[in-house]
Length: 89
Image 1 (cartoon, rainbow, N blue to C red):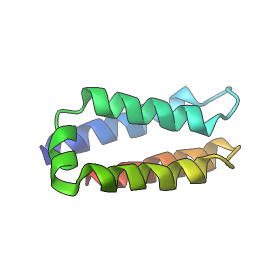
Image 2 (image 1 turned 180 degrees about the horizontal axis):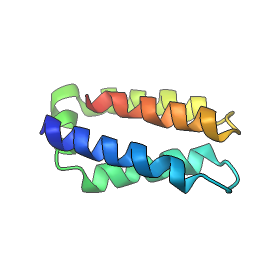
Image 3 (image 1 turned 135 degrees about the vertical axis):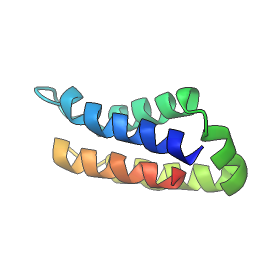
């Protein structure tokens, strides 16, 4: 499971910077996309959710949505979204 999570995270880290070039920065939409994609496609998502708890995941998400509301640069957004993935390690 951990290997799958790492592979998806690495894939995202490679693709994410390419997807933000020459676009306006809307970090809330970027985090939405990352969150939804991970929830729907990661094989280990349910395992981590069961291990750490749904409430913990909701709190984690709220913290990160609070952070991205005020971000307007691609670099800052990239850092925050990468850190969002720390929940799954």
